[in-house]
Image 1 (tube, rainbow, N blue to C red):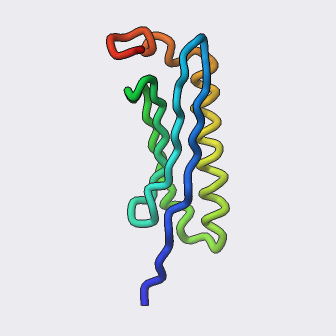
Image 2 (cartoon, rainbow, N blue to C red):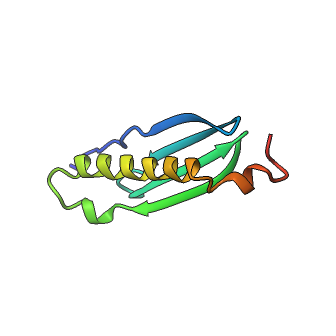
Length: 97
């Protein structure tokens, strides 16, 4: 019988930067689609998407722990990008609120 493995819950943060509220969301794509997906939103518009495979972790006995650490690192890196100003030009674009 195939063991059922559920996706890990992700990370979600609303972060204020220079008067605008951004939402950063990191998700697990699941064992059948082993990707960590992080989106940065402003007003419902996706400004950035980062995808990273975690197929290399699946053979490890404690792969869930390694996946959680990798998800956290990717989420924090996206937060750093936000606060370094990486999305400021996109935030001034036609869809910005």
